[in-house]
Length: 116
Length: 106
Image: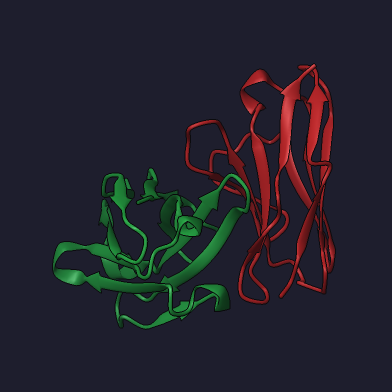
């Protein structure tokens, strides 16, 4: 069965970066794109963007351009999202999901807390 | 940006009720709308895709309808296990989630 396993919680300082991973199993990794979604109490769910796991091509929602960078490592069936120049507004639970819409598969979420 | 406005933001319901919630798009999104269910402490789960297609394994008490700018999710016979927050997502113009409808027990 398809599973997306995310890395653990992160505590980061303002101005720093974090890199979250999403390891896929149970299917051919390049068969499905992987999306990333942000969830906060105040803003609800926000779609960050997606990555083509075969070509590495990406598409970002405008708001997250320059904030999020999506990459993949096909050899380990893992997708990554790096968040840069962190501020307290980046504190959230981040999910990977698949594919682009009709998001049938979700990771368990990674809590990122930005605090000095 | 396409804004998705969900209503109501919360509902107090009883087991057995028929529940209807809405999602209104700020522009025509065709039928490019999904519905998701999120229970406390869990990841969202896909219920409906393409506005009206029930995902595999989703009970038939869940029904999605609509096109253009107005969409509806109906739960025909509310069960206790359906207590959750429900979100719509449009993917016609980039992607936008609605703010959610929370179902709570009376």
